[in-house]
Length: 155
Image (tube, rainbow, N blue to C red; front, side, top):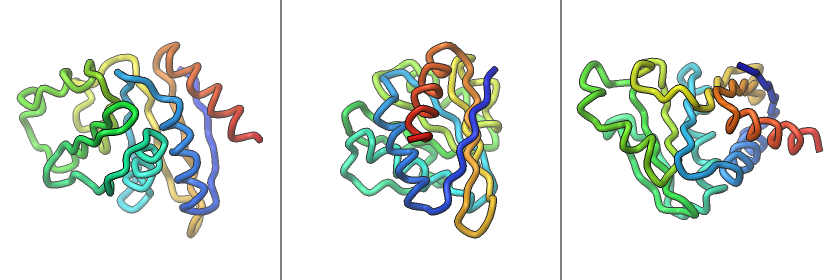
């Protein structure tokens, strides 16, 4: 599994990076987001949604578990932080194999339900407004996506 790390120095820069990811993702892609509270997981998802052409306001699905948004391809935004049990009953695999992009915050909670091929993203604080985003590609599709992203980030 390869790792790519990109540092951003402002919320706007993080959103631009996420927007670029949104431009690169395809139907059926699965992205996981890990990081402390307030690290920027939902902010990242808002930028990703912009890259997908989502026009609705994106907010955390903490209490609803899953929110769906229409864009170039659908966005399935999941926050499983409050999920104690019952992940199997949610039918997550239908989302993962569906026509949209699945973004799962706190994905380690449902590790057993996640597909093997996916892009794991860890967001960490590296200063007041600086974030370090580590991308772990699990599968050839995501290695290619990360290489395109790394090329974009160095320009």
